[in-house]
Length: 241
Figure 1 (tube, rainbow, N blue to C red):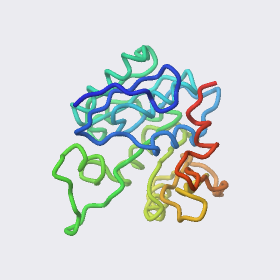
Figure 2 (tube, one colour):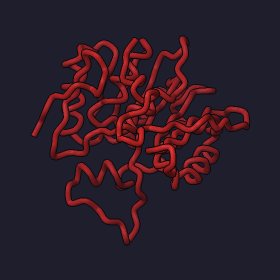
Figure 3 (cartoon, one colour):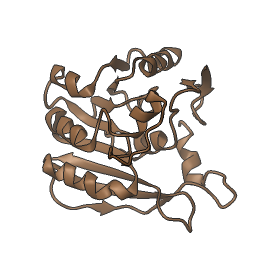
Figure 4 (cartoon, helix red, strand yellow):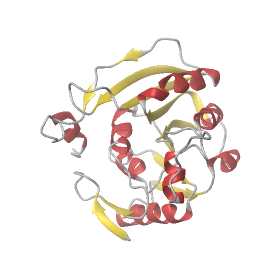
């Protein structure tokens, strides 16, 4: 069932969701608030954009042109509706395609930033795949994996362009290996903990194409207070200046 929701705490921003599909989560709020954007940023690509939470949040932070690519037609249609209801058609373009085939249609070395909230789980004989195809594609690397993302970023990013990924901490080694294999130097990492006394359950990683060596581990982010409320820092992410 399709519903229109407020985009978390963002004022005047709406998003279309479908209760039968994989809805966006806090991950999609964390990444656009983590990625480095500057005044010279002109073009951004969001891979696996879903119903477009990352492009919509990015639009509150930059005037850059944003392209979101989503492989699933029904999810793409939700994204397109979300862009239209927020009157963002002049800034955000959503494409319904497989990024692994459409990337050849983009100009090489043309993007300043690429973001991705990818499927978290590798496929193996023991994988517990969801009967819902939407959720399977969103959660498991059946259509897109870390190697795909980094290869595409290597081709499409400008020199010194930024790749930002939100993932699970247990995949951090894989992320760093794939980045370096594709000449993307990991530069910034932040761990996100559900509560102050709990292990991290999210990691944010930023790499720079052909960047110099040197990783900055920035202070951890705690997402929830002990009573379950969002922490003050998370709440700030929901406020548009």
